[in-house]
Length: 267
Image (cartoon, rainbow, N blue to C red; front, side):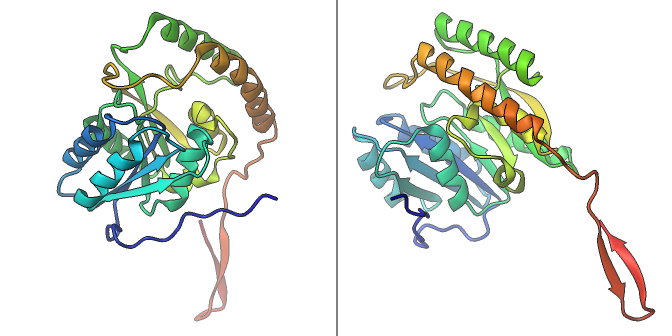
């Protein structure tokens, strides 16, 4: 029987009114964790922020490394999955626990560079009053040739079937309005289709160049063939969602002005 699962409450490391929540899903990333936490802290020094690590059933020393960091970093919160569920589920776990109006997401392997996040945040705030997402586009990508070829193939398929023109939907670094994020339909692997899903909800999607570096510790958790095969069924699902999108052009609320009994409309 499936149970309704929520993140446990923990006020011991709760930052008062954080401006931004940084979500980092990890699975067997021992050695990459503490250096990345320190970089995130440096990037938001002097700000109210929280870092939420989601340990997706790690079986190496990731749990111990997170526990040690928890003792030193007041902004850090750590959530653990009892069983391994995948990156999209881990991100959603962090989202539901996050308290800031802006949500940043980083891959836990250390290839994304946290000091790019303030620039992404600035780009999103410059788009106000529009809400949506700023998604990174990796410059000088430090991955294998096979991964780059697979990404190019996936990009062409998404453009053809989803009209998704974002050049790097697989990039793990992004900032999104929490309000928009919570409206997105959830399904496994949905993190690979964020630009298309945000546009489906009427949100703006901004591209921003970001740096990329080689993995320093551990191994990649993804097999290229598996990703491509699973991606086909995911794309069909996103196509189904897009065809059933139906949004009102504008929403107003009729209010009664009690002083003169006239009605006014509020957007």
